[in-house]
Image 1 (tube, rainbow over the protein chains, first blue to last red):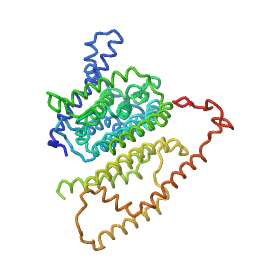
Image 2: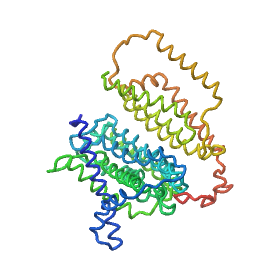
Image 3: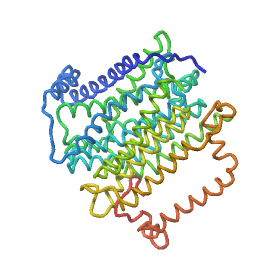
Image 4: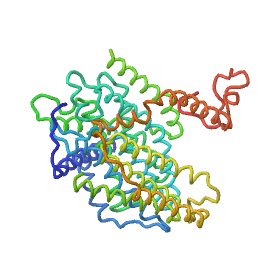
Length: 309
Length: 189
């Protein structure tokens, strides 16, 4: 068993701060890309997340008639909580906040809770466009979740363990992203899916007045937007031990390598996500089941053969 | 068991039971569905206390997913759209209460009155594998025989229920190049 030290509960705070850093970089990268597209000063873009945070904190909270307040609140707050729970099992080099023997399944279970949170966020305000967005998300989730599950299976199969530290340690020679590219690509698409981002952002699409985001304003909107970026960041952070060799790398300490790799991946996800067209949920459903699922199953078969031979 | 594990167990047990009771107190389909999800999540997390990590996480995963999908069907298909209007979550209340109380007394009385056996042996090192062995080991042949029957049932059920089959899509001789679908799919078939 590779050496990882489970650190005390107080170290969850630095882990959360590192996640926050990755999320803020993702938000800034997105804003910079928008600023460059629009010909605005790039520095304005870089601080746009901070400016938006300040703006939303002062904005009054919107109230809708006959809203289901408790469920709405759970949905708004849930995304951020899910992202934090995801990174709880990620080893930062040789330190890990929670060394679960089934860390990969933990990640999968938490990413499924996003189904509930996004739907609740759309259900809560008692508004039509929000609910349409919520159902769009579930339709999308039915398409990306099964391929994502099998994409998570591939590295665990190759490592012979569901423990995240074991999966990271099994890539001493070659990163899993290199010899299981299909699983890695499908995993990245799954991350875009549960972060409701890029091509899988139609649940918050402009064609339905913002969908799940239509009725939220002020601190509530801040929570939801921060939750989306945090989920994108958590997906990037979790990809490091799963596909990108964990904390292995020259010179720098392990935790810093994890951070660097996660930052590179999250900026790549933002950049690629911006360039892809939105996938219509009804079409994506068939794509998920007819193309992605067989492709990732073949990938798992190849991995299984490599492991056996 | 340490004190912490005791506390965690009791907190999860109370959440599981109270959330389960809420299912019948709420008058909204969405709240009832997610109260049930909370109850199942508490049960799944309680399984972690007996070192059944994998089973516990899978319970959480499956139940949250199932409740999310259930909410869709509840709201889509139930008559009078009770999901969007307040409705009582209990049916045949009096008989249900009698049955519930009788069941509780029977099981609770059994738990308190039956002399519990003393533990023989020690817990298996891998609880998940031991549980799987105990559930499936001697019944593998039955399970393997049942699974194709179940798959055939699912396929047959869908084939009967589907409003449009392949002859509608591809013509009587299945020779239409491009399927005639009211809603085009994503891969251009």
